[in-house]
Length: 439
Image (cartoon, rainbow, N blue to C red; front, side, top):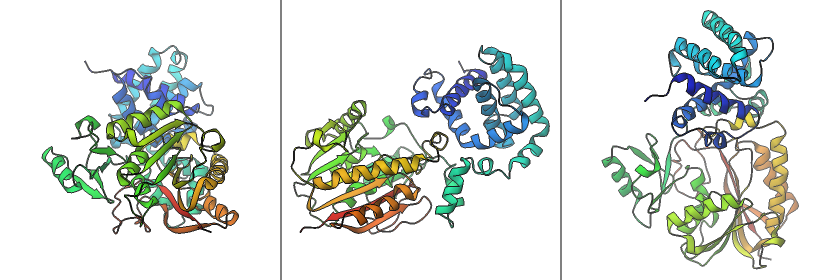
């Protein structure tokens, strides 16, 4: 039996309200009942991508914001319907069902007449109202105004492309474990199933359309993993040019959910990897991922704070350290469209302090001649090149090796650990490869 649209809108608005209150979209979706979750996820992602326009329209329809539940429902309806023919349902249907959703809920019943009046006016004056919001950067780009201003300042030639691409759903990219089969052989398997894919990076494939992971041949056997092409750069770059078969001692700091940990173990067959994460529940995700890949025996997973080595380090230096530092996640808004609404202007500077603390704490753990790869999934320079340049000024025993720097979606990157630049439609990342002097 199909779920009434009014119920889907109720559940979608509840998730939107939670995000506006500062809670993660991913976490909120887990509380949605299974019968509603697929539809609600699709609708919520669309609302997150159109929320700037919706809030601007609501400001013109109502001089004062209604209570949070009613505001979320009204903004949900506006986000889904302002594009007219581009809406997921006919606009009149969306409006009617949103009003019905308001009437059916205790939290919004008292505002159902207000919501009805706003949406009916929107139907009558849609073109004029939309045109009136075009001059608002938050409405035009569907990102907070401060975010638009920062991207424009830091990427004067590419800022529009960056913001436009953030509105598009991210492609599904795979990493093929070439210990089992070649990328070309796996690509052929997918084609037999009717799944077109193009090579990206050294061992990746980008699917023409996303599918559930259980449909991927060999997924449960660890023959393939879901991993963005930009994230696949980390493992091969860390020890590029060095003998992969050496028994390297590697630290993967801030390792959850374990995608890069698994890739490290695939690239360096004799390495022993210590994977840390401060969250014990997230450590379980690393365990599960390594178990699927068949590499659990070669890694130690530990719940610990990477910034406090005295609590977990055994005193034996590491040959290599991968530091995938906590960041604003501004480079992965295509996959997590709520991030833009959860972040605040000061978050990047605060996280840059955390990143600097981690670099300071981990650098002494690196053996002379060892390498540390610093990365974030952020496009903000305060979490990338600014952090690394400040570190280099304070640590004269650190040398920057050829590195990709900021990998910007839509631009051909340089400094990659492969001879070609085909990363496909990758996420935004930053990479800096640092080597410690031997003296």
